[in-house]
Amino acid sequence: MVREYYSIPEAAALLGVSRIAVFKRVKAGSMPAIRVGRNWAVPASALEKPGPAVVPGHLPPSRPIKSEPEASQAPFTSDEEMDSMGWD
Image (cartoon, rainbow, N blue to C red):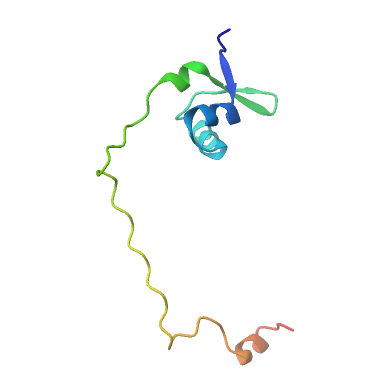
């Protein structure tokens, strides 16, 4: 028996991604789906299309890592500043 539609969790399992990733694709319009009550149904044809291939060694550049604040820079506010804010 061939299924015509899959739920978002089923589609995510078949694609190897999270439910949220599939839901975001549906909401963005990059993956077709129909609304069935409160749920979404993804057509089987949408799961058969291959996505963009990732070539090993050719990953997109990552963002630079932010450095930690120096010890001289206090990350917290002083007690006097907290008192002036009305904190108890």
